[in-house]
Each structure stands twice: as structure tokens, then as C-alpha cells.
Length: 272
Image (tube, rainbow, N blue to C red; front, top):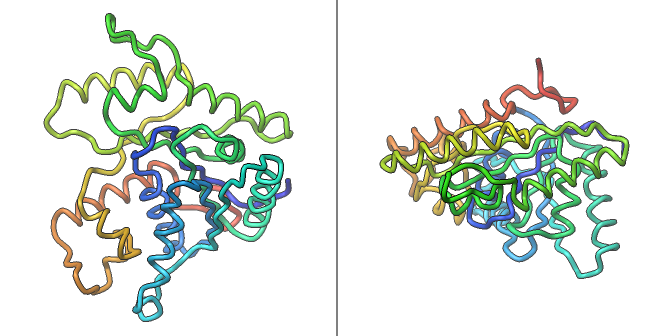
């Protein structure tokens, strides 16, 4: 497939990790850089990213605020795997040929469309709640030694999609970034354990760990309003900036910089 866009896949087979919230904030951040962005939602059951964008476009002050939106396509499965995969392939090819960046939001489960979407990732971003329960999708941990026993099902799936990418003749190396979301401020022991286990696993399966977004009530309100933290520079009824919002925006800027999206060339590749 000939394309010029950089494709970012936000994926994790565990639900409730903030994939759609992160996807929307990455999309708007890229749009604010003046980049052309396509987005794909293949999470048919939740369709959170699709509803987020619908909430945005449905605002009565949408035009007044000049809110930027991506070229968005929802690709829910119908049960016909061959037809669904052909539709997703056509969507990826079309958006990648006409935009600088394509962001793909995936479901929190193992699904054939999710696996196919993952195989096109130039950058894979995996939000992970900072808990041993959520770590289970990446690694099996020996409770006696508290060491990584082996990679788990999602890490194995990522490896398989890399092989699928190589079989298409594309560069097999995918930049994989794990974002530690909802970092605990008080549970220092859990935090240290997660740091140790993720560092050990990162060496084995080849990802990079960066701090993600904190647990903040503001994200729930922003979803219903179709807004992101980046939109709060406007004077919008019901949203007064406070220190928590400022801290959240700093977290988001750090995430965008860590992923390498704060300086993307129009050709879709990060500047050196």
C-alpha cells in the first residue's frame, strides 16, 4: 500500500484504560499543529471516539469556536470477516493517502479488525492503568518472585502483527510506547513494583515506557461536551481553568512530546 501518513494505533486488549480519551487528545493536538488528520474507530461495541467527535460537531457553538475535527470514519464489524477487513483496508489506504497522520482507536478485546489495525501501526501507543491487574494483559507475573514469567496475550498479539506487517513487505520495526495512566500518588510500593516489572518486560518485548494521563474528573465532562483540554483556551461556558486543568495540560504536553508528535513533518514523519 502506497501511503505518506504516519499511522498511530492506540491499543490495549484491556478496557477502561483511557484509549479513546487519549486518541481524541492526540488528534486535537495534531490538528492544532496544522496537520491534516484522519481517524478510524473500530471499537464497535463502545464507539467512544465516534461519539466524542459527534458530541464535538453537535455543539451549538462549534462554528463560533472554530473547533478542529478530523476526517473520521467508524468501521464497526458486521460478522463477515473478509468484507470487514476489506473495508478497513480501504479506509486506511484512503485516509493515509490524503492526510498527514491517521489515528486508529481499537477495542479493549481481541478482534480480527483490531489485529489488522495494529499491523499498520508506525507508532503503537498502549495506555495502561498503573496496576498489577492491568499489567496482566502484557505479562504473566510470578507471585512468588514478583518477576515477569513470560509475555502475555497482548504482547504476543503485537509480535504477530509485526510479522504480518513484514509479510506485506513493510518495515517490521514498530515504535511501541506504553503509557502509565492514572499514576498513584500515594501507593509508593505499587508504583515501584510496576516500574520494575515494566522495565524488565520492556527489554524483553521492545517497548518504551512513559508517564501518561492522571485520573481527573475533567475528562468525563470534556467527553460529554466534545471538548479536549486543548480547547479550554477558549472562554467556554461551564469551564473555568483551574490548577488541576493546568496540571492536566502539562501532562498532555509531556505525553505528546514523549510519543514524538510535537514536531511532525507534513509528509507524516517526525522531524529529526
